[in-house]
Length: 112
Image (cartoon, rainbow, N blue to C red; front, side, top):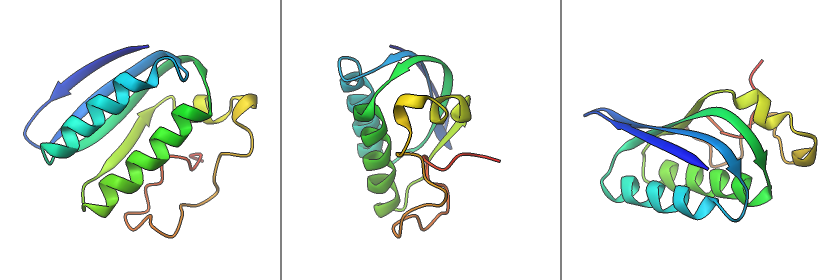
């Protein structure tokens, strides 16, 4: 996994690419917790994700819910549809956000 963080006053952009499996998601988890504590909005930019598993998807969902509960924004940009289109993640992609998605920006909703 490779991450790159770009921070400004409004938000932080975390660029993520590479292997996003259980062996590598701990680093992203620590980064997200740190920015949540700093009270920052976060944008995750997906680059070329080589591999991803359910641990990564669960981390994204949990982080999104946690940020939303604190009235902070966690959004994604980049190659989101490529990630959500991986066959091994079938069944985890949503058509609309959950009941806690008050900003209507669920990370697991495929873009049209």
